[in-house]
Amino acid sequence: MLAEFDPLLNGYQADALVSVHVDSCVTFEGATGFKVARAATSVIPETEDRLVACLYDAYERATGLPRHPGSITHNMTGYHAFYRIHPQTPAAIIELGFLYHDRDMLTNEQDRLATGIVNGIKCFLDSQ
Image 1: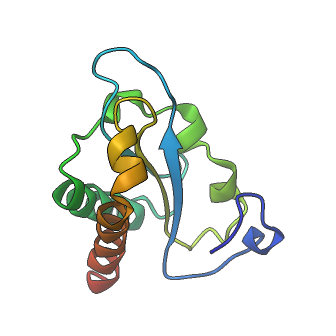
Image 2 (image 1 turned 60 degrees about the vertical axis):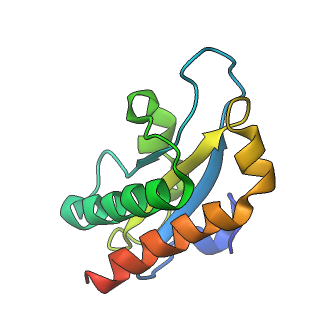
Image 3 (image 1 turned 90 degrees about the horizontal axis):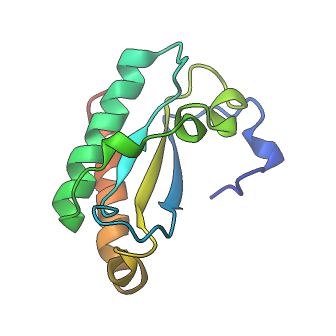
């Protein structure tokens, strides 16, 4: 586990890096669900697309939350950690849910959230 601005991220090499976040506390209808993204300028896009797909599938199965890809922002695809790690380290960022509409799951069912992330990483590693 690394902190968001951990100096160990500089040149970090691993089989995968998954940055875990929760989404904003907006109250508009439809602000529920999760999303996963990779660096927009990846040098290993096919590899990172597999990581993203594995996380999407496993997290959706574990949590039952809907996908919310329409709200992926530049802050996700341009996430600073993507550009600090070694370029051959596959990386993704996942927003686990929205703080307002998904609050109950985020605060009371962390085991389901963790299971989805772990299974997504396992799926990716098994595909290597």
